[in-house]
Image 1 (cartoon, rainbow, N blue to C red):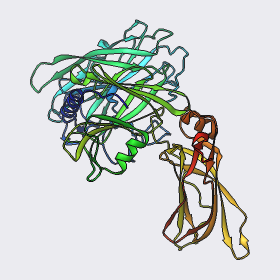
Image 2 (cartoon, rainbow, N blue to C red; image 1 turned 90 degrees about the vertical axis):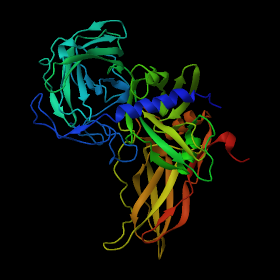
Image 3 (tube, rainbow, N blue to C red; image 1 turned 180 degrees about the horizontal axis):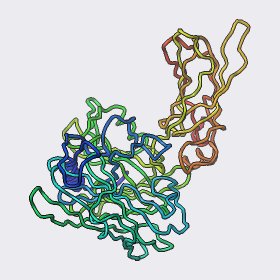
Image 4 (cartoon, rainbow, N blue to C red; image 1 turned 120 degrees about the vertical axis):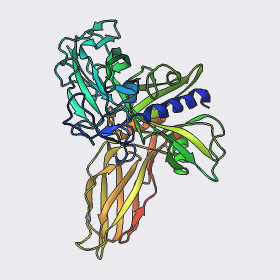
Length: 486
């Protein structure tokens, strides 16, 4: 059983997060002169807005949802000063080809000078204030102890770009050490001036910023309330993973926790502890997460609060549920997911219809889950063959590369009504997850820690597809040899 983490630390975390997030805002965009008032409207915390696919994270150009003028906030790479949220939006090597949002495995070649894009989000109630980062004041220290000073900062105080609810500032720093993998701190000054008053300087410090040379882990944190009448939740603090987390989530009503947006983005260096949700002094620093990328999609997650610790191996995109003590039938919780891509749910083209319904005819579909010892295989593609029953017998087979969703579901869409034979070919499966490049058998053996096993339910006969309905097949599942019946 996992060790308990002190509830007091986590409740303090939630209180701090709510107080911080309720101060953030959205403005009406570009065109404002420096220091001029900006009309604002109430808005969920930047980077946490809804309207995205469930638990989606967006991504860099070419990979998922991306809007270059939207605030993009990684709460693990942020500090809060006088109500303003200062964060690292992006970081490049000198060639700009290597950056922290792609190629999570890291590139050990020297980066040269480092370009940092800092993002400042203003408090919702103080949109008329003037604010600015003195980019000439920004310095960093890498994990080899080298101090990096600016070599080509923007005009101090001039924003690089106006964005909704804030501004972006750019600074070029000296090269990090040849073996550096992390900026242990980025420090600078934010100047703030209410209308008619002199500016005041506030120091900010952002800790634990991975370089493109480091292996990185992306993630998301969703504060939720779980309600499960008739299905008792854990009576005390608990951390649930894998099938246990899915069981609670499937039987619960998820409601966003008061004061939070829907999701918060995470970005950490593999194996380096980070604070949740915002690295600043106080209670939030008492809850820390360490995510370490392993082979075949494995990610070792450690949670710590004071002297209490919990750790386990999770898999790319799997839910990890931190359940907090609360009222009898209600629990506050943190839903965590980790992966090696900014898009935790890699996108893929839908599977093409093999026997498409005629024009104007209502089609049906066939669905099955693909599991490894009871757990979803994650985003992948594999070969599926389909036969359709005709007057003279079974037709010739048709086949296609079918998309497996992150929760292990494969769907054959828009099929003409009729009777089908379906074959799923697991040996052809290739993962869509970064860093998982082995065969299906290698992946299954690594995940179950058992070298032998077999796939079952790969062939289904006599599957009836009706107009507008979905036929659900038994799960296609890898079963380790020790679990097979004699």
